[in-house]
Structures are given as structure tokens and as C-alpha cells.
Amino acid sequence: MYLYRSVDLEPRANSRPWWTHPLVLIGTGFAILAALSDSAPAEPTCGVCGRPGHNRTSCPHDGPRVHFSRAIPKRRRCDCCGQAKYKKYRHHPRGRSDDSDFLDVCYDCHLYCCHDGDFHNIGIKPRDCRVLNRPSFWRT
Ligand SMILES: [Zn+2]
Ligand SMILES: [Zn+2]
Ligand SMILES: [Zn+2]
Ligand SMILES: [Zn+2]
Image (cartoon, rainbow, N blue to C red; front, side, top):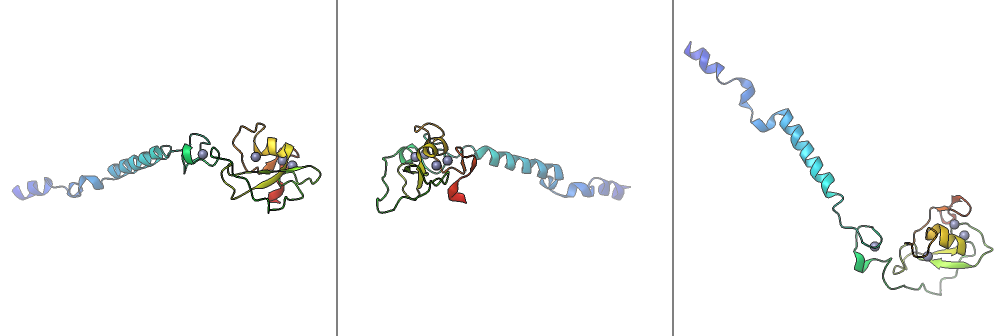
């Protein structure tokens, strides 16, 4: 009788630590996922262009305008619409302080494709030409 009771008081299921219980592990997993997804939007983004990796003072879109070297000949065709008949303007796709990349674009493409219709808007490298409604020439 005494032997039977002592076995019954220690069932096998309770011999494992509480934190190995499947529900506890699942709960911990969700807690880690929640912490990760919470921290993602907390990454500081630039107050000017809204991109991560730099701040307002180092923003290439808000710093002093850097002019491209005149030694680089302008391309004959617009890098966006591909047309050769219009005057080209050299555009800063990475911000006016960043001269590591440029596009030579016609006026319409510069305004509508690169600056979303207003030169006060942040400049981008257009993937599609809005004037001709097709992939930008630099991609083809
Ligand atoms: Zn910025
Ligand atoms: Zn163009
Ligand atoms: Zn521009
Ligand atoms: Zn265009």
C-alpha cells in the first residue's frame, strides 16, 4: 500500500521542468516574435525623406547641392523616356548631395518621373516613365 502511493505522487508527466511544456514554448515563441515585430518600426528614419540609415542632418536629399563633373558627357537619349530630341537635365536620383549616380533626363521626365510632378518632392530614380508609360530607358 505504501509503495503504491509513493509512485502515484510522482507521475512521469511532472518529472520534466515546467518550461518544457509545449504551451509554454509556444507562448515564448510568440513573445519573441512580438518583440521582434515591435522593434522593426522603431528603427529611426530620416525626417526629410523618410528613409532609414541616416538622419535629417546627413540626408543627401536635404544637404548642399553637389554638382556633377562637367567632364561626364551628357547622354544623347533621355534616361527615362529614351527620346533624343529634348534638352537633357542632369538629375540626382540619390539626393542633391549625392553625386554617386545620375540620370540625364528631359524636362518632362525630370518633373513627372523623377520628382512626382513637383521639384520640391524628393528625387527618385524612376523605374517607369510616366510620359510614355513604359519601363524607364536606363533599365532597358
Ligand atoms: Zn533622408
Ligand atoms: Zn524623357
Ligand atoms: Zn532632379
Ligand atoms: Zn519619363
